[in-house]
Picture 1 (cartoon, rainbow, N blue to C red):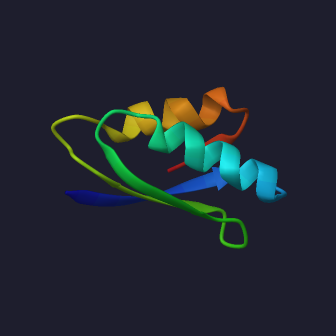
Picture 2: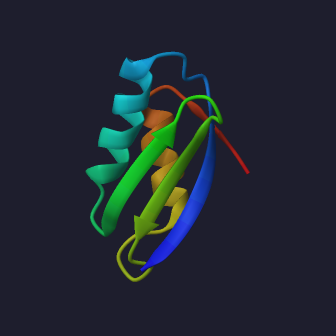
Length: 69
């Protein structure tokens, strides 16, 4: 398993946090996703053979948030 921290802009409440976590957890290969509203980050533990960071970023963006590298 690998771990990545993705910067997420545009989150302002618990609903935002849950939307991002649920979008990430719904991806095949993602073991866990934890969002920190204060730090504007999503920490994702995933299987590199089954999921990639650009796929995670796309899932976050589909929820209406911006990712920054």
